[in-house]
Length: 414
Image 1 (cartoon, helix red, strand yellow):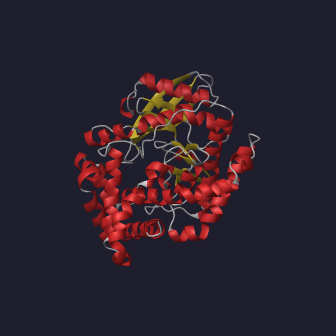
Image 2: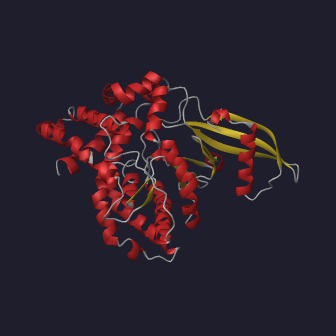
Image 3: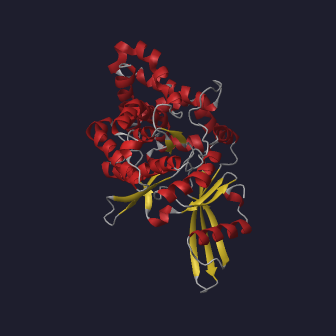
């Protein structure tokens, strides 16, 4: 069962048996047919290939046909540079560990925060299909979420963190999570260090075009990468703040929302793609989810209120285990960590968004060929991003908004 393209009949049989057992349904069945298809003609993501699996069963107890729908995620094949990047990044093994050994316990303690996973091994993950249950991504190409969506997402995020904290207080074994997004003490040739430095070079080129900073440009350029690089240290387990298992990858496309009948207000959400999970202070996740999918104007109006709501939700989740948040995470300590990790939200925004909000034609070009992917992650990133910056208003506005917030508050004020 190596990839989603190599599912055998016995693999399908075992998958369906697991599904029926987990959902308290009849375990006696016959597979009538199954069909595997890509989620779309275009690539769905940078770190995996996505498929839908449709299975028709005949239940033996009542002879009825039942349709099962799964979402499959596998390591991409056929692109050597793409596979080399993913393997050196360690994303699939990290996510398999999370779904097999972390989320089942966390969700049993608190509430569901992720889709049900029916298979996690050998660079393949198979989940319930949340799309069939009315879940969908909440943002457009700009990657921006609204207040109601963010408020909705903070509740399961607090539950995820609280579940991890409760596990620690109960003395349950914690699975080690090696940092794969921002690893410390690795050679400068490491794929993540190269990726980070190239992103910084993109923003230095953008800064050269912004009239606001021309009088201080030399100072900004000299200090920009240094200020960005604090994320490597801040991503580690803290010796000063309370730590928890974090999602680590909270941009808009990794949050799926289920809506009410008027299709406006989200009822609940689930998080997907736990490939960058880590053990660090909760504020890192909180500031990331409240920064990447928001604008500086939105944060000025709503950040403090949403930070307070997260703390309230965390208190409610801890209370389920008879724990008092005032003793586990005192409010003063929480806001101390918020102050320290505010910079992380902006760094993550810059590192994510110069890639994920590129115009669709650029993304298609990058992911559809070996040369395209290699070019972006090695040779041509500055050219590609600056072309988008000059030609695409949405890309230019979002990038400039993040960059000004970071420079004004964490480069010029450092």
